Length: 468
Image (cartoon, rainbow, N blue to C red; front, side):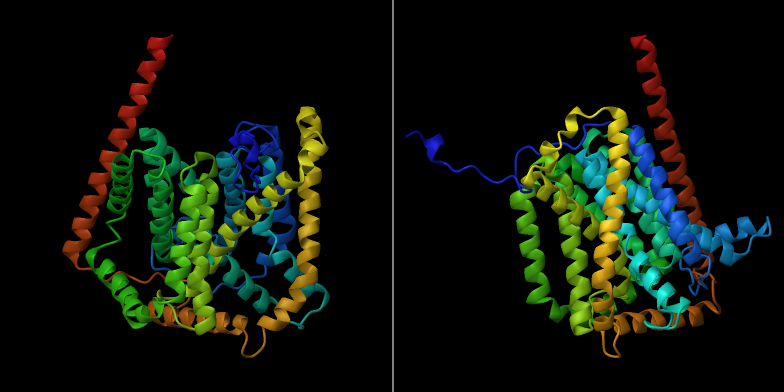
C-alpha cells in the first residue's frame, strides 16, 4: 500500500486547497449591479421609515460632520435632516461595501450576498416587533433609536465604519501591488475616517494592522511593513490641522486611564483567547492567499468580541466606551457567518447538485434575486423566532441591554455637557502655534500626495501610449 493510499482525505470545510465557486465573476458585473439595486431598495423600504422618526443626540470630536452641517445650511437644510440622510447613506455604503469586500477577496457571489444580508438584517425583526406590539420592549421610537445606536453606532461612528470595507480593499491592493493610485486612495479613505470619528480611528489602526499581518505572512515582510508605515504617516499628516499635539495628549490620556486601571484584568481570559485566536488564524489561514478574508475577519471578530464580551460579563474595559466596538463586531461577525455558511454549502455540495455553473447569465441574475430574497426572508424568520427570547433575557433591569444603554446615556450626556449642547463640535482648544503648525504639515502632505498621484498617473499614461 502506497503512502498516498493510507492518508485520509481532508475535509474542505474552510481548510480545503480549493473551494468551488458560486460564480467566477468580475468585481462589477450585471449580478453585482442587481445586488446593489436590491440593497438600495431594502434600505429605502425598511430603514428610511424608521430613521426618519429618529431624534439624534450626539456631539462630535472631529470636524467633518459639523462641516457638512455648515455646507447644507447654505441650502436651508437642517442638522436633523443631514444626520438622517447620513445614517441612510451609511446603511447603503456599509452593506454595499461588505458585499464588494467579500466579493473582491473570495470571488463568490453567495458569500458576498450572505454577508451583506446578515449585516443589515438585525433591525428588521425589531421594527416588526415594535410595529405589532408597541410598548412591549421599551419606550417606542426611543427604544428603536437606542437599538440602532448600539448595533450600528451614532451617525459619525456609523459613517466612519461604512468606509472601512473600502479601506481594507484599497490597502490590500496597495500592499500587494505598491501602485501609487492604491496608496493615494487608501490614505484618503483613512484620513476621512480620522476626520469623521475619533473612536473609529483607533479601530482603523487595529484593522490596518491585521490586514498588514496577513499580508506579511505571504512574503516580503520588510517591504510591506514600510508600506504600512507610509499609509499611517500620510494619513495622520493629512489631518494634523485637527489632530494637534493637544488633541493627541487628551485622547491618549483618556485611553491610558482605562488601560492602566484595568490592565491587571487582561490575564488570564482575554489574553488567552487573543493568543489562541491569533495562533488558530495563523496556522490554518495565515499563509494561504485564498484564505485572506477568513484570516482577517476571524481575527477581528475575535479581537472585537473578546473586548466586548469581557466588558459585558465583568463591566470593565481596557478602552473608553467599549460599546462602540459592537458595530465593528457586528460587521465582522456577518462576514464570518457568511464564510461559515458558504463552507457548509460546499461541504453539502449544494451548488454542484443544482449545477449552477451551467446556468445562463439571465438565469444567474434571476437566481441571485431569488437567493437574496430567500436568504433575507429566511434570516428574518430565524431572527423573529429567536429575538423575543433574547430581548426578554437581555432587556431586564439587570440585563446586558440595560448595561449598554446606561453606558451610551452616560457617554452622551457627558459629551453634550462638554460640548455645551446637542449636535455641537467639541473644540480641540489647541494653542495658536499648534494650529498653525498643523495646517502647514497638512498642506505639505496634501501637496506631496497630489504630486505622487499625478506623477503615477502620468507614468501610466506614458506606458499606455508606448504600447499603442
